[in-house]
Length: 107
Image (cartoon, rainbow, N blue to C red):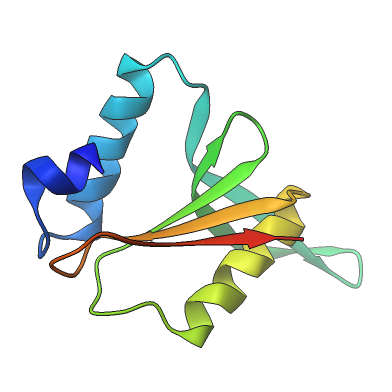
C-alpha cells in the first residue's frame, strides 16, 4: 500500500520492484529478487529459466504487475513459480490501476 500511495499507478514494473525491494530492506524482511529456477526436461538442463520477481522469507512468491487488470494467465504464471519454489503461498500485486490490486494464491 505504501508504494502505491507514494508512487501511484502507471509506472513500469521495474520501478515498483525497485520500490518493493527498498521496503523489504528497510523492514529487514529476507527476500531474493528475480530468483532463477532452472528447468530440466528428460534430465537435461534447458537453456532458459523461470525468474520469480521475489521470494520473500524463503517461501512466499511475489509476482509484480503494472497492468490494467490481473488475468487468468497471471495466475497460471504465479502457480508455476509456486510449484518451482515449492511454495504454498503466492501473491500477485498489480500497481497498474488507480487502486492497488492484489490476489493471494494458496496451494
